Length: 435
Ligand SMILES: Cc1ncc(COP(=O)(O)O)c(C=O)c1O
Image 1 (spheres, helix red, strand yellow):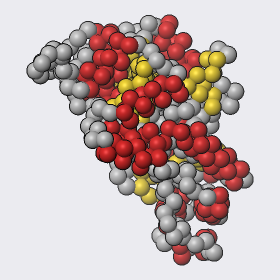
Image 2: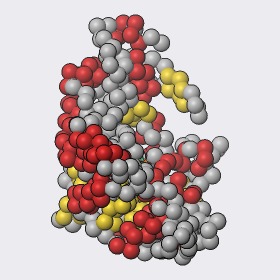
Image 3: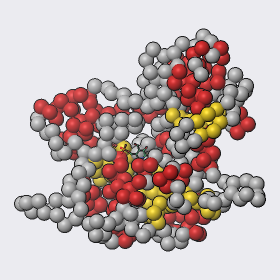
């Protein structure tokens, strides 16, 4: 269908320049610090930019140590490996530290959160999502401990910059003696209230990770960090990330190593971005609030958060279509189809309409328990085992919150550089989809 010729969209002009989901927003100093690295010949995985951003991020987040790495995925891998070693001891060089062990994992997240469990030979068990924040459901986590009482590790992410229910999750972890790997890749700068204290995401686990991927709230084009209060853990991650070199005059190795350290050039970009983190959060918040207001008359809601006990970074604004306003639509593993129904719409109709007017949205991250690669892994909902819940002789299929949010939701263009006029046009396109 050509949306630009559809009479429902009459009078709306496509954007001359694409409006992105979330693209890098540079300010000038990034260039200065990159140039400085080149001028002084610190074009390597050591240098002043790395030292400086480790100090600045640790101070911002409130951890003693930050270790700059090549990606958030690298941080998550080493965090997961540290947890595995702590729980189950050192593995042989050709084996993962989680071999033979289950790990409870956020289900509605990007696969980089939980792939490290597989890198370390562990078995991910996916925990369903709650509607209040679209993150791991503490009630489903409790259920999971009833079914698998021996589990000792939880990997938890904060989706789209909105913190999960960490007070409850931390409490459950403590009751069961489990460790937490926190994936704050999307939520840098978001805060939660623990008791009467506000703390940053990235301090809430036993091992914590952030990302500077090009689409994140601040970026180095790539990069990530491991955050901790433990000097021993910080030192270990530094060692592992630089090929596990021992203090010997030659290359000497007692442990398996990785080439995961951040480059001083990337660190220069991050260094130029850090002073703008709060500014970016304010822009993202304004975008979220503008959508909230502009879409208030439609049968949709925004990705929700707990206004009393959390302060998101509003990285991505998303919407969820009310069940009774969902037009008929189906998805296969690669294709989709939807019907046009008056007064209703569907995520793919809205995404296609936005694309036709040169704006980028995205489907909700497809839950991990629905991914072909993890289809044989357990999935636990508030009702218990979420697999094999349907029956030829009985109506219904059981609760699956993640699948429902994936079916009815979508991520909206949330770029810092989008003007309010441009956002108004996007809001108008969404309105016309429901005509
Ligand atoms: C939730 C989540 N975890 C982990 C990652 C991985 O970070 P990176 O791309 O820096 O490896 C991303 C994004 O890329 C993410 O969105």
